[in-house]
Length: 284
Image 1 (cartoon, rainbow, N blue to C red):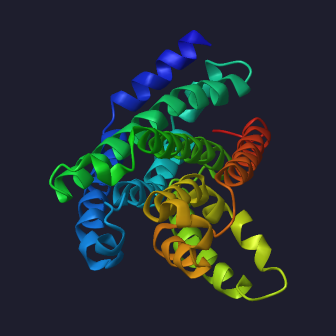
Image 2 (cartoon, rainbow, N blue to C red; image 1 turned 120 degrees about the horizontal axis):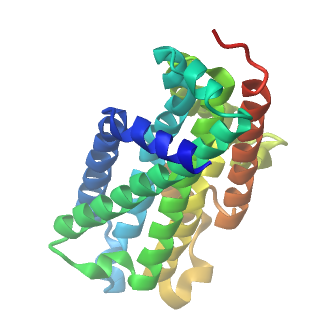
Image 3 (spheres, rainbow, N blue to C red; image 1 turned 180 degrees about the vertical axis):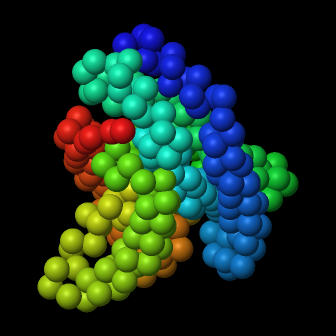
């Protein structure tokens, strides 16, 4: 297993894919942090409450929910890239059983997912600091920033592992790029609109994209409202929550840990599916 893990590290760091996908994560993170806090001036209640809006928390959530697609693609190419380069045969021949390859990739790419998550949180936070003139109050306190940032890193990690399972299941470098993009930004968007206002609208938070977004946003939005409203939080209109969730992801009243457990389930299903198909697939 140690040899397989070392081999996976070499495969990652001797190619440019890992940093090519990391660049948009960094750029999106910094941009979301900068713009998210810069727009704080449009909210009149800043003056009414005499409080500093912790927009940095929302900026981290926003950047995470956009950046996770790159973590998924990074993980998906773990197997799909080898099928494209036709190195999968050698990989399988040097590993017995094949499941050892999957475990090695999961371990190594989990580390990559953590790197993506840390880069996202740090650059989103840096952008937020610069956007507010280095006002740390825009993070609602160190504990709030740490919890939202930790959730962001965990979200990136899980999206990466889901990608590994998805890539093992599909094993086509074109489809593993196209299908996630189409699903996350088209199919699930249509599904969410279709479910709204129906008898089964409660299923919305359990869709894969919504669950993945909710890991961070269902934590960041309540922390944001709590920091702004203070003792008046119980009287905060539901519309305020829903408006924030509309822009920053997540679902009103749905706990972040429920989103985490849901997405863990999706990750386990794709990894199990990748293992089942991968150990039975013929390779040339």
